Image (cartoon, rainbow, N blue to C red; front, side, top):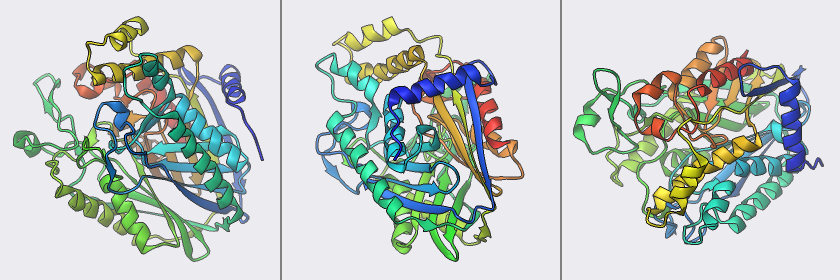
Length: 467
């Protein structure tokens, strides 16, 4: 069993930043491990409950807290054994895991798997009737004495304990993994671009969100999206044992009513899981920072099962023509990055806003995330981006709410590979627009914690990970 303290992890990462080569200012390292003829690979899947208790804050404490559970939230993952130190991939039905909360989650799973945190990828699905965990922001709001929790620490630690226990038990039952397959299916009438209402200069006039009742906005074109739901499946001989699904859209039909739900993305996954209990199904949200269902969703309760069915059909279609091939090589790559802060952020001004009891809860809790990001940059704690390569497929793991353009760039960066992109990893930076979109304003730009320089840093990092 490998035990890695957070201090050791950070020291190791920062040492790499000084010894490794620099892609762009703020980028830290890249490392690669390859095994050819991987006939001794094993895979162990795990899952554990992460449903918040009654009264717990949802989406950072600025919407109604938990009053009931429509369907439970899960963390689902797998550990890959036999390609050097174990590799762990996990997806979580939470709004986000940010900063130290993300570091601690990866560290806990790494300790359970006997590996290091840099070989663990944790991505959130980003439902909103779910926890939005930032331990740093929790400290900031607790100091005020009158603000709702960001994340209740007892519950958070219980989730980590469940995760460790689930992973340790899973490893005992690891199965050989001999083959891999990939496929894609087109999803109809779910994803649409949020930033389609612009003036003559390209500036954003109005946003089409997760739901939209403005018929003028809904009548506008879909805009730039990635319509394909992608699947990468793992096999033990002829038996499919894990299937990873990727689709880029905000996964909310409606929220804010205090009813916990994995929403249409999670419900589609659960429907497929019920059909194939012997195979672990995982769902990852792609680069959906500027993508949501607003064109096709009016926010009514009737739309949730309709959107669920549309995503489910995409999952099924993506798996219809899977052709397993023997796994010949495995590669795990990471790049550490620390993108610069948005120049509009000031720690002093943010603290004043948070401390002003005349401001609304959302007007005080949200700035705590911004302040937490600035504190992180001061500590120089990097974000880890990673990619798992198996034969001609790549599972790319990106942070926060990246715009769809990054996902499309990733595919162009490695045109000969089947690239499946999961965003919503470390959520510290919040929205990550492209450099070109910063001058155009709009909601996403207004809550982007990074300088536009994040674009070339992230793009160059993807090149390292995929090439």
